[in-house]
Amino acid sequence: MPSNPFKESLISRQRPGPCSLVIFGATGDLTHRKLIPALYNLAVDGELPPQTKVLAFARRDKTDDDFRSELEEANRKHSRQGHDDAIWRHFAESIHYHRSEFQDDQGYASLADRLDQFDHQRGAPANRLFYLASAPEFFEPIMTHIRQADLNRPADGCWARVVCEKPFGTDLKSARSLNQVVSEAFDERDTYRIDHYLGKETAQNIMVLRFANALFEPLWRNRFVDHVQITCAENLGMEGGRGGYYDKSGALRDMVQNHLFQLLSLVAMEPPIGLSADAVRDEKVKVLRSLRPLVGPEQVGANVVRAQYTAGSVDGVVRPGYREEDRVDPASMTESYVALRLFIDTWRWSGVPFYIRVGKQLPKKATEISVHFKATPQIPFNTDAVRGGKNVLVIRIQPDEGIALRFLSKMPGSALRMEPVKMNFHYRDSFGKTSPEAYERLLLDAMAGDATLFARRDEVEAAWKFIDELQHAWHESESPPPMASYPAGSWGPKEADQLLGQDDRVWRRL
Ligand code: BG6
Image (cartoon, rainbow, N blue to C red; front, top):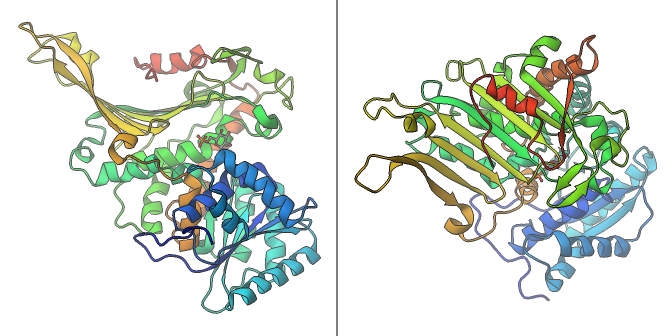
């Protein structure tokens, strides 16, 4: 028996009971890179509920052992806390493989048998968590089969829940229809639409920063805030055969509709009346509903810039242009970059622009939110330094997680000269340990029945409603706004700089 693989650990809520986790589409990248390393790390920390079983449901032919050794290799590469053979061996015994087509009734009947066998081994019925990690076109048939096989009906005293991976639909219509299908099998309170950005420590800290500190919240409004920027830069392109998926999606649907809108909601929401999942999500959805719609090519063209990268170099490595990428249509009109100017029509944010930019093949990987405060009156210093040195609060979501505050200081010396200086908080220095990966937190939350960090039905639909108008202007209007370009390795197209330039502002240099 390894030293102490499943040690007791202190967590503030009750540890969830035993659970069978069924992962649909388990041979994919997500399971190897994220889900299994997350479960393994929960086991290392002693947070994985006892007697957890993982059942991988997929179409390829494999034995349990084949599958376990594939996962072991992946875990060695991707586990946050390294790989311990003894802990792995113990953990891997809980992983099993179930071969079936997603549309095969028989596959679900035998799935039910296997889940019953697990319960039998445990000596009592256990909870069931179904994880949709397959290609999205299979979500509907999987849901229908789960319902037909009665797998959504838990035994007395147990629960059955579903976790849906993104993309949750490709537009409002498909999201609604998927919501409908899911709701026929699971109640909303048992439906967990994952957005891994919400699982990031730094995203969770936004509420703490805003609502547990006296310092920031009084200033967090149009009277003091000049504008807000949210940047999500990636220095990768279409590696690993992603071009096929991405070319059908694009930056707006791949990142803005979900991750960036979630960050926006957390930054702009009103204080919730409590910490229940619904209290928090009630406030977040109001932000999305208050987004001023951009309708028609003129409004979209004036407030949104879309672009594709051309050949260039990132970190000294030569990269092809977007249209030359593997599995990308050479005449593609899919954006690899998008910048938006948004307004939230509420009292708090009236007149404050929110600028969002996201793109592939930018110079580095970095996600951050910066809140730019207004300048004080020039009196009594009467110098441009006051205008040039406005306060900026930067929330670094990743990497180098932390928060920085820029303010003006007098330079030492007899003359009155001012320079912007920085107060800087780094998670790694203050807490001395790495934050859990987003999927660790989210899997555990789903098992514990806490949906706070998952998107609710109305949030997803409100986000799609806004995004649909932009897609429509780009792809279905008679005079669509142009597609700009930027060389790989640059910070995006000049048109995005002009978007802020028109307002006499500039993007923050990261
Ligand atoms: C995914 C997108 O949801 O998020 C990817 O589909 C993107 O295109 C990824 O690369 C970014 O996640 P992270 O956590 O690496 O910032």
